[in-house]
View (cartoon, one colour):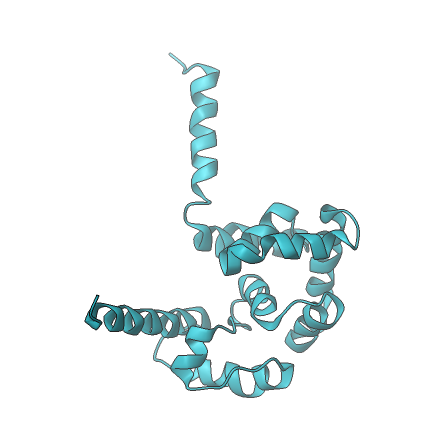
Length: 181
């Protein structure tokens, strides 16, 4: 006997919504594959990246993008430009120069789309690398990225970034626990 349609649809909907619970897996899996196949992102995919990096930034980024037109066509244009850009430096320039993103958000977007070429410029990672904060494209490619690459024995760039971030998190946790209340 077959299940009623409503029960089948509920199973699909639950499965479909669960992808957002493990947001990083969704981004580095389905969203990245969609980008490679389609050559652009949809607004919900793009804003999942924004929220993953900095939930508090979603409103200001939405307002900024709406100045260029509706979200769907703006995000399609922007991410299409990233797809057709000639190399990593050009991809990052597009987000920084043309779309006025800050470096941490721009690198988060590109890390999802090109995880073997980019890693996120993050304060926790900077502290682990003992680097001063910076905003420049040159310093990102010539100092930050190479330092992340040589920072650990992890095999891929994403895991090197995760390890640095996690070490900083753990150190902060231990410091917090050792403080008097």
